[in-house]
Image (cartoon, rainbow, N blue to C red; front, side, top):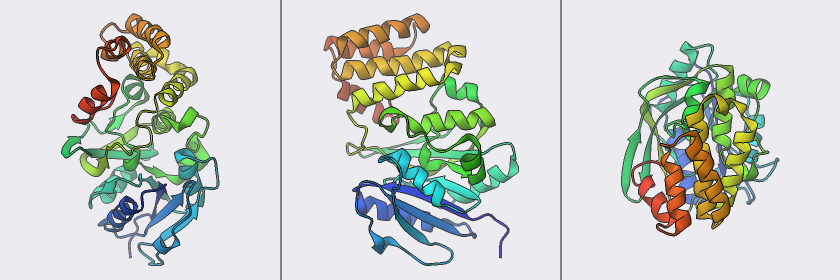
Length: 305
């Protein structure tokens, strides 16, 4: 018997059967005494019902995405199918470490004002591993406007279900191509209270060339532009607005639109002359460096553009 809350873990998936099984196994291996149910949401693919498990403590439910095709619709389908007090996200190519869930539940229960808790991550890319752990445990909206904080990865999200479904809302399905939907979700959560994070690694994040957003430069630019237009709060943190506009500049340069790249790079420099993404965008637009080279170098250090 335990007074700990049950947890539903939502795993949207598409065309990654082997990695998916590793993800499910790692969630089931959590040293957490209450029920942990995995809700696997198949997106734009036939559901594999052989994954279903009826175990009362570690069940696995297999369903199909009933909303807009894509990651956001898959996550929302899982959220609406869940009935646990707490819900979590995990991508189908990531794995949880054993103590992840117990540490997060303890922190979330200690802070009633918070709806969402994350944890540190271990980024695995091209044979190298880099740990990313934030030095503080409370993140405010202004912190997120200033910096995306890659450490707050969606595969580490643990949330109060009621605060999401009946509070700040589901994952946005309106963002072009669903790009940056996890960041926008964090921003909305931070509008209502602090985002917490456990200062230890709890998730292994695989970055690889099969990631669906690799080289989708136009989608990235559209999604980030939408974000700037939807969050006027960026105007209160010029360095944060410059960071996002610098990302747009890089995406436009990488996509071959030199005119738009120069325009966005100019906006970025005017907001923050020290923003490096503006100069990376100019280097790519001039042909001095290839965008994939920049991305590979950043990923090898556990960072993104």
